[in-house]
Length: 103
Image (cartoon, rainbow, N blue to C red; front, side, top):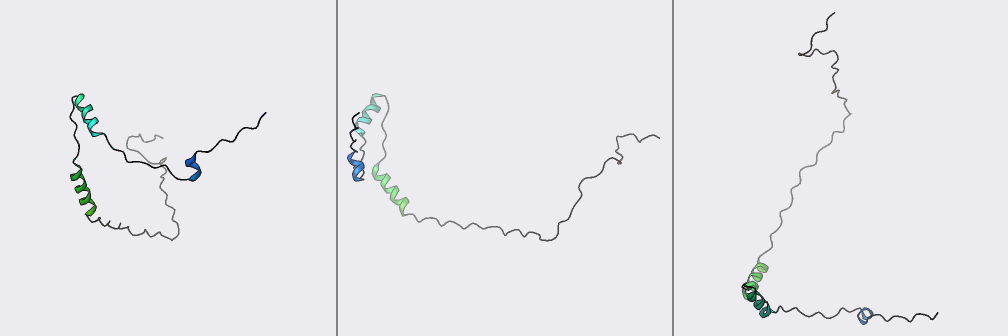
């Protein structure tokens, strides 16, 4: 068998640079025509007003976040453990709906 020929790498991968990207321009006239042909009306924002609002938002001072108030730490009791019995022995207890045992 013949040895395989080496495959050449793409030029962009060898020099490490990214390809140049151009800005996208929306074809507004074509979009207006498509909208009119469909019976719709094309509505577009006023770029001057949008830029003015964005500048006003950027000029506003940033709100200073209020620090979080942490509750005081709970002090744990280091004293000895106390056993508390919570179970009652109900075998000898007389309940109101039971008949007393007859002898």
